[in-house]
Amino acid sequence: MIELVIDAVRKDLGGFEVGRVLPFAKKRMVGPFVFLDHLGPAHFAPGSGIDVRPHPHIGLSTVTYLMQGRIFHQDNLGYRQAIMPGEVNWMTAGRGIVHSERTELAQRQSGQDMHGLQAWVALPVENEEDEPAFNHHGPEDLPTLQTGKLWARLVAGSAYGAQARVKTHSPLFYVHWQMQPGAQGTLPGEHKERAAYVAGGTISVDGRQFHAGQMIVFEPGADPLIEAVSPATVMLLGGEPLGQRFIWWNLVSHSMDRIEQAKADWKAGRFPLPPQDNQEFIPLPETPPPAPPSS
Image (tube, rainbow, N blue to C red; front, top):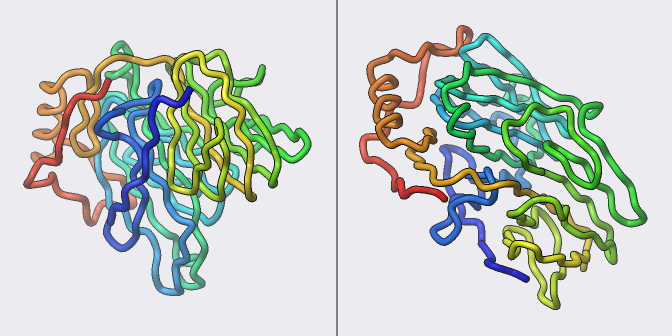
């Protein structure tokens, strides 16, 4: 019932490290999820923090979700929004958006613990050129469930008969599990492509143990029982596949020509910067990162 196991690869994003899970050479997407970074658990000492300078996106939605810490988002639509644990920042790039993510002064002075994930969800072809948008959702928009030793929050999409109040563009699910030792759970059965990412602790599936930093991709139609061996944090994700996508840097599209246009626009300064974070930006990479198509 297990199609593939993916081990997160450590990536330095300039002052802090993440575990890069997707895209993976043998599995570029899980449903519409085309990218997954795992931040932490990490401790930022006083005086340090996150400074992801303004950069562009096209053709996707970014999904930021935290278990610990606080990050401040700014974009060129004028939105300025802190995100805290149990909340979701859902930013739809569409035809193009620019944003930054930073640590605010108070947290930078005091230091903080950070733990969270950022996912990218590819947009259907017909929505790739939509107007950009940003939405912040508090816990009241994200249904929760407690069943014995298993606590669950639906971060986005639909699962287990519930629907999150987060606007999505294709069928998907994104679920946060907190599991006590011995807790058991099953995947939502209504979605074609499904995976479980272990963000903390150890779980058992089909007689095998999996640890923090590992994603288990399941065969379509499989009905695995997931059990916590230790206290565990697990993110479930997937949905309907959208077809091939190209990824170049922060740009996603079904068309490489469209990515080339966005590259030229960013290099020429045709993307406006966030109004209150416009003194610096991330330049277009000189050496292009690998960009095999995702499907």
